Length: 191
Image (cartoon, rainbow, N blue to C red; front, side, top):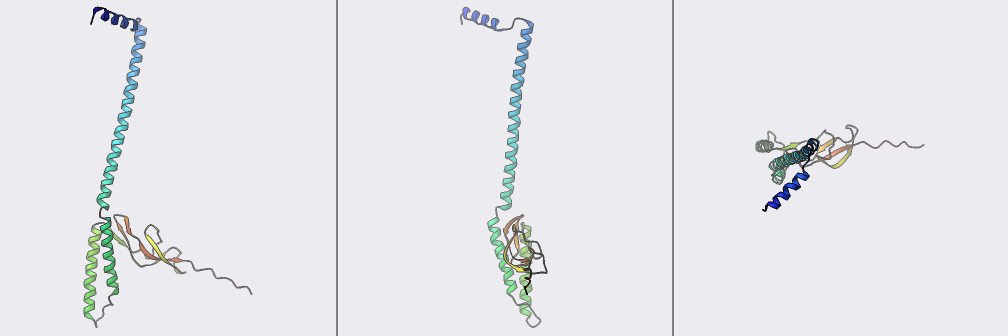
């Protein structure tokens, strides 16, 4: 660079630079304020980024847990069908009596298989709930019929045709139920 250009740049810098201590202090204070504002903006962006990363990690962890817990949902629904069929088969067997020892032993054997099968399902997060006597819950029960009765309050499950099945708290199959309803009020006759 030529000496003239260097001198021109120094002259321009000297003109732009504050001359008095007050001007110098005001320029320094303005620069400090500008740098503090930039720092605050950077800190805000950094904090927002950290919060977003934390949210992404939490969401990913929750999604992975859900995938781990519910990945077998279709298989579980099929296994529940097998458990229901086993129960139907047991219900179809005649009650054993002393006269028919073979049927009694057959029933006891199948009941043992069913207990073992249900225990395996429960160890793997699949639970069966018999709703008989409970209040009707549309999230867990499917009303197949209503029956008039004075013996139970309206909305009570009188009979469960099938149990409700859940996988780690998530519904696999609703219970098929008969629900109590109030009998119609007697109509008074006009004489």
